[in-house]
Length: 413
Picture 1 (cartoon, one colour):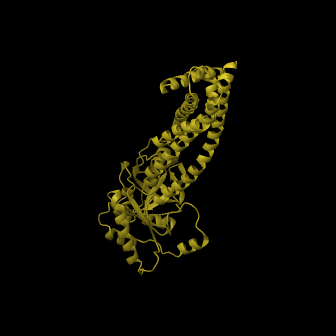
Picture 2 (tube, helix red, strand yellow):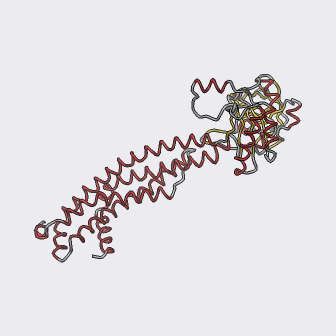
Picture 3 (cartoon, helix red, strand yellow):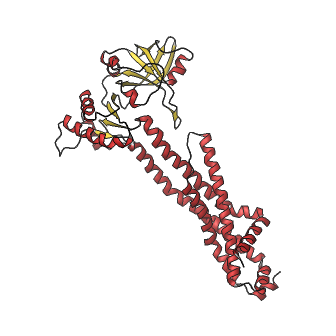
C-alpha cells in the first residue's frame, strides 16, 4: 500500500470522526498551546528587558562606577557591612574616569538609591510623590533624553548652583496641563526652582512610567536632601563594543584614585545593566525548568487518550482489517496504516496547539504590557512533540491491529 494511500485513509478517518478527533486531541492542543504561549512570552520578556528596561534604568552603551553593586535581591549581613565600609564615589573619581576614557560620549554623576520622593507644588496645584534626582549636565546625554521644550541643565547651572529644574513628561501633563512649564516656578520642600526644560515622553516599561521625575543640579540637590552615599558615575560609550575596554580603563583609574595595591579588593563596582538582564535570565531558567514537567503531564494524558481511541478504532474496524488481510495486505501494511493515523492525528493536534498558543501569546501581548515573541524553535518543538506522541502512543494499537487473525477479523461484525 502506497504511503499516499495510507495518508489519505488517515485523513479520511479524522474527517469522518471530527468531534471524536477533536476531543482526542484536546490534551495535545492545550499542552502545545501552553508551551508555545509561555515560551513566546518569556522570550519576549528576555528581549524586552535587554533592549528596554536595562537601557531605561542605566542608559544604552553605558556602564557605571558605583559604591555598591547592582543587585536584585538582598545582601547578607556580612556583605552589607563590608559594602557600607566602602568610600563614597566623589567628583574626583568622576574626573579620574573621564581622564581614563577620553572617547566617552558623556561622563556624568547622579544620585543613586534610595531616590528621594517629594511633592511638587506649582501655584495651588500639587503633584505628590515625585522622584527627585540630582545630576550633572552630561547625565541627560547618558539617558538619551529628548527635550520637548526648553533646554537641559547645563554645566554652568551645576557650577553656579542655579535653582533650575528639568521635569519629565508626566509632571508636564499632570501638573501644568495646557500651560507651558518653561519659565514657571515650582517648589520642592519649600525651595523654589525655575523649570528650564521638559523631557519628551519615554513611555512605560512593564507598566512602570519613566516620565515621573524632576532633575536638579547636583549641588542644589545635595543642599536640599543632603549628600547621598550612593552617588554614581555613568559613562556612555560611542558603541556597545567599546564598553568592555572603557570599563577596564575606568577600573584601573579607580584603583589608582583609591590607592589600592594589586592584591587589594576593589572598594567600588564597575558594572553595566547586565546584572538586571542576568537576574531575569536566571528567573526564566527556573520557569523553563518547570514548563517541561507541566507540558509532559498534558502530553502523557493526551497520548493515553490517543492510544485508547486508536484501540477503540481497531475494535470498530476489525472487519475492515480482515478484508484488507484477505486481499493480500501484510502485517506491516496494517501496522503502518494505524501508526500513520496516530501520527497524523497527533501532528494535527500539535499544529492546532501552535495556532492556539500563538493566539494566546498575541492576546496577552495586547491586553498587558508583557511582550510576546513566538520563536521558530518552539513551533518546531511543538509540532515534533505532537508527532512524537503519535509514534509513542500509536505503536501499541498499530501492533494490535497487525496481529489480528484474518479469519477471526472477517467474522467480526
